[in-house]
Image (spheres, rainbow, N blue to C red):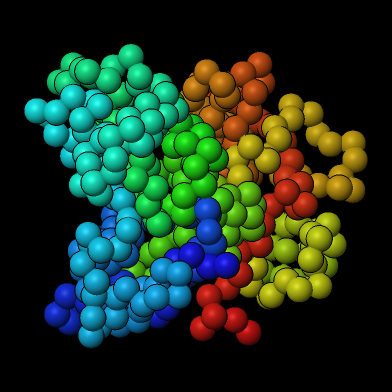
Length: 363
């Protein structure tokens, strides 16, 4: 059963469209992230779901009941939703326990049940020992846990999170994104999570909605989104990649400065004449010697023009011979090549993704 359904959702400010024709369904207990660059419409979409903005087109429904349309919008407090903001919005004059219990008190929950529910959620978020502390005495991660506990304890129909980790340092963000997923696995609350951080979306989400210029570019699970992007924008926004643009010429694909055998590509019969590919840096292998067997991969002679050691891997930039291309390759720490040395680049066509041409450019 679909819990939350957006149908043709749109929002314009005067003549400027911020969100256009967003259609999306979330199942009960599903965790979906809205991912995209600043200004893509993800936060506007979240605010419409929360009831802070009325849409100028389309509808928002929960449990088959329409909450928002251009003619009517149920106020936020009557939607049965919880929202967590970037700033956490916890009250500095209340203890951890008082903050978390606030929503339960508003619902006039009996004292014994309130205490039971409060103790349970504080235990789950590992804050029981800080129940009587004030926010000023907590770390950023602990304050974030308070905000999560306060939102979850009332058992909302839908949980909304607006870039909740943006104020934390890198190590704490990594810890908290796993914590958010752990809490979701425990409570299975239908969740919409807004972020511009690809790693957060990949770790936390069942599905990711990639948005660009107010529209949905692709909706998919993290693995499919990364390995089978449906547009150039998605391929470039989800992780790092190299783009290879070539032209089909008989049994070969002609790229700037080199050619590759088309028959090695899994979907060779479906390739258009102008073909584009996404090649992830970690799928590129570097060799010092010329290949003895070229039957399963594309091989290109090149030169190392840049390198950076990042601890877990080397980040190399390779320029193929007779080409202005720059290919970025990620190699293991012990695979060391000096700048200026020649290498052979191996690309396995089975590990790269063809980028579909835009609909108005297909032939």
